[in-house]
Image (tube, rainbow, N blue to C red; front, side, top):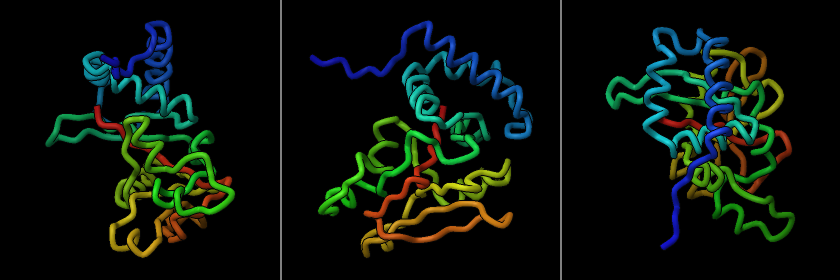
Length: 188
């Protein structure tokens, strides 16, 4: 039987937790009223979530806590890198779009990468809420969850921040650009 547990080595785990704690302490405006010890307790009980956070970190996302869901009791981690994570760019929206490309296929899709990492793609509301905590994607853009009726017609949504305003646009789901990736959210 194959072991599908996603974990990281103890040394790597400690280094990641140290990085996350330092980022948490440096950016208190993102998570007012939340204590790191409470977050770490949740992380200690969820090794698979630590694995996902490591994936976020390793691909350039700089994950940080951006909130707490009172209904579920979960802390919300989100990619807080200034620009869309560098190792998640040049990808189309989803697997269907990837398969539709006849040539010059990107290596992956945003939806598939997010699933593989164990994170959620941000939706428009979450993306706009993130932009209230800082200025993100001033030079890049990020794919966001696309409503089924738009996707059914071949489109997909992406967002960025320009002129001190958050814009949501559309593009063909199969398109990809060097400056477009995705931001993920993880519930812990």
